[in-house]
Length: 276
Ligand code: KMH
Ligand code: ZN
Image (tube, rainbow, N blue to C red; front, side, top):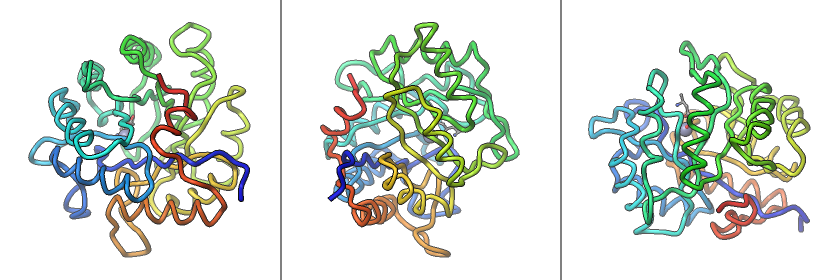
């Protein structure tokens, strides 16, 4: 058995870019998101990373859509809920921070924080330094720990700067987002550099895009990291075979366990990632 810690599997179930035209399995309504989360939990995920959609499937960071989704998830299972503050390209900072208005029983468990601007396919995911500090301030005010989304290596340096300025605390939790068009590629070298470059004591997850998603679960498992899978980043279970979120989680769980890793429960994930 591995001496490595239990692996936290995060299911990025919705995203902002994946469409129903691409896959019929994309959850859109609160009930669909709640059902999908419960199935992902059963399959081995400890956390979901969520975006929200309007009834017609358009990406939205509306507070009430997130509230309904979080309630639907928590009515069904104990999975941790991480909300996106990235939203979709082109959204304003206030729009992106809609889910950070949720307090009390509806407060999420975690929120993402992208720490730099990056090409995002043919678009640009804008994260100028003042905007990053604005979102970090709102996450901190809500008492949440951010997941630092790193689409490129400089975003780790920016996390160091944010810590120095008091916007976040170290050690932090990072997500290496590898394989976005125009950003850092999904290669073993990139993964190994990113983890070698982290501030001491940090935890990390890897989210690799498209066909890289499941193989990178194995690389993360071998290296003691955590993994993110789901329809936000990849719609295929195998070449040409569309998968549901829970099927992607089950396959990730199978691959992690084959590498000797156990799977973290939500409570273990809370402790491993040092959530408040
Ligand atoms: N949809 C991307 C432009 C996040 O969730 O924090 C940004 C994104 C990052 O998905
Ligand atoms: Zn996202």
